[in-house]
Image (cartoon, rainbow, N blue to C red; front, side, top):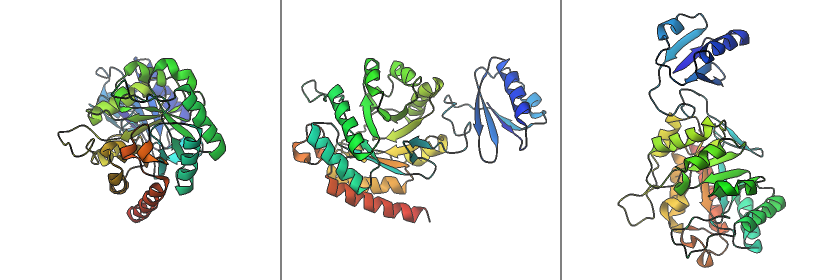
Length: 334
């Protein structure tokens, strides 16, 4: 249930109303927008008298919400959430490129790629230290050493870093990581999501391989229920009957999610297609669809990459992609 307050309501009046709600066992989510304040009521609202609330002088309107996701719901929070990562903003008209290798392989590799993507216009550096792989025989990442190399690249380039977490037990290693990524395979690892809800970190939450948008938003709700509302959603393709591409990029999810939620939505065209030659057209399409950012895998030597080389573009190719995406965004913003 949401209660929209009338303009000009005093702080004391709002606090009195919130205390009244809490006295009935409800949690209250406050969203103070530019033109109106919305109180989101979380809990058993079945016994709340809507007619009584509508009769209060300070309330403009009251609505029940049937969606199971409350905190992530745009009805609770009409204005776009803007996520600030070390001064780089995502959402609310702010667009960012997140780029880097699928996996951190060695010192020279991550530094070369970091400098290359920065020169091309990326502001955030991605890189896998812990890698979830389908085969137990594939490269699993450098783990703690990989995070140390990312932190060195951050120090030398000034770029905030994004890297994936796989296990709650490793959370201490992420103290200096700017954005913690929850991968597709962990989207419904609810114990992990709950723990991340108690951190002050920005969380990049990827959609699962076979999950609906509602399930993605419910996973975001797990994090937000713990008090952490700094979440970026990522569409990275879903598994369908198609075999020519690694996954099927659900571009319709971008405008649909932005209609359903106030959280920023970015797109990962690399995992979505699995082919480097398809990254550019899908990145351009994602920008045209209204994405708040792109997450692109970039490697200085894709043919010899230890992980996902087939879908990685070179720094030079990324520069071309970034340039074309910027031109598309100029057009759609007119």
